Length: 358
Image (cartoon, rainbow, N blue to C red; front, side, top):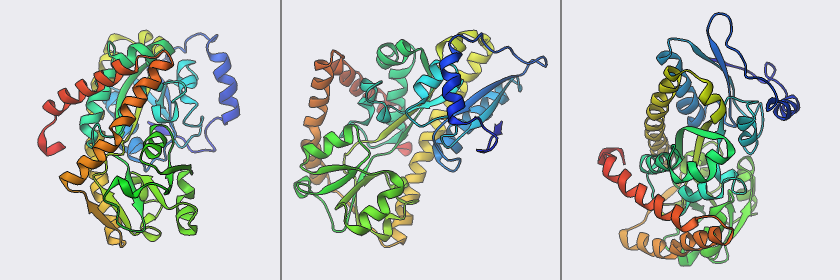
């Protein structure tokens, strides 16, 4: 696989132009030597698990399983577009395989945010299994959102749950009213409002300054995302076990391209996708534990919530799920069915996920 630097890649403007034209462009032919090169792109730096243990792991396995008949040119770090662009880039075949992150696409894939709702699961592998089931062919999310956009998911990743970072211990949702709290948006905004906090949209690179200057009182982030932003230098405490939801991502291919590929190549990608989902969720769990340790070494205190405290949080966020489903229904989308399907898939995933992997 070739990972191309910014200077080697096409410019975003050029790719945008290509995206407009690709729908009318004949399918790319395999080179004379029989090797087909796929253009793969995402919004993650190469050090991020979604890149290193996600798409790179996947494409390495695809190459192995096809005996090198499928190769890859990889454009990480938003070289070919921002995180919100890949639905169009993949569907139009300007990009062969790209990241599709529902939390950034609530206007385009609203039902697919169901995996990020609070109080459903705190485990990366369990959630990834459930979302994977719903986004596979025949699953509700595939049928309702991915297939109509001409997309087919290849594998799923889940960044384990958001925690609350503050400058004092927080153990009860009753402590949140009035707190200006950084949020990534989407259902996390809805969760914070339900808990009485005021969500503030702040990009990741700006969280350190916002917390140090007191622009916000608290932050919602997964622990593994707090480490690169050095949050242990500007926050003293974090919750451990608050059911604030997570962040799901998928990598997808266009359905049209999928159908062009030989059956052996499709089988190889299916197998690689299943292996990558299992590998990535395990890494996400390890990264979260390591991040917590790193933050504690930096002076941060994680407050593990007791079972009774966790139940109070669960009770406090339960209405978020019901409100989300009702909002989807009001928009003409099957929100109740999506939530029911997610809960049922989670139950099946818990039965299939070894206790040691949770």
